[in-house]
Length: 359
Image (cartoon, rainbow, N blue to C red; front, side):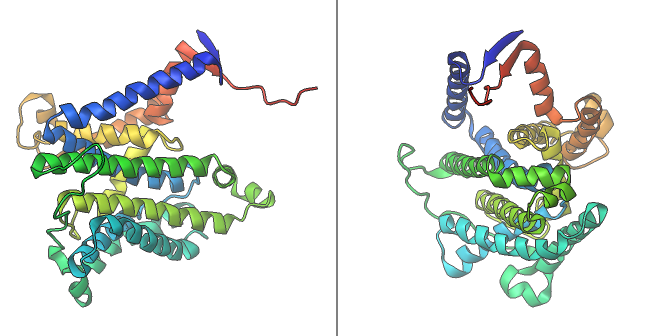
């Protein structure tokens, strides 16, 4: 087994090579792949952001939330309403959606996060169930258009970005959605990484491991949980804006606006690896791959998968991911990211720096 010291020349060489390969892959996809494939990665970026937001609350803080589909919907409807009714440029709706979702998240979190366990799960579950009903409420139809939702929400003319140049047509929109989604994903990832490696992150992990001990050590538990819940809601709203701009429509029955969305975010996070920064990325890519691979199984009964899932007329990706979750929890409780780390340690081990004071 190869042992490498953290911060050594070999360690930096591995990092640089890994970053270079990742950069090449990121550039290769929108330049050499077909339009459908580019769109799939754009969709994956949206789900990864939503799963990252949930990971901050559940994975790092240990607070069970099943209501993030509501924040996803808040982002989507904020973008749609501002673009349709007020003529906003789509890019500015990201800021508005983040602020509104942060305020709503804090208002919900302030009373809700005082409870724990199953009670917290039930309350956030109620939020996810009630949100689509609120969107259909007749007294709000003037704002949300009720059950039919809001359509034709998109960039009329795609912005001209440096290097990308002028993008036109269906292919151009797919490439633009890819880079926009990647940009938001990188920002969200850096925010999560910065929070986890800061004093706030240490407070979150302390709350997750032992809330009473965290309070004894001086952590303001309520304030920390409410703050991170609001930040998590903001990030999930950004995913909702991306989804709305990519599809051009948002409805109360949208897949990720209903309770099913919260379940999918949860599955992606846990399968990838809860409590890790890279886990939602792996889980999101796996989910989108499964969704596109198994989409026709419900109508095509050929093969083993067709025989097993031929009874459904919809993509069984969520069901397959749920079954995969059971298997993963049996053999890799820390998710795919934990399994990857375990396999990597058999080949190579990074020895942490010696931070003991010198004599």
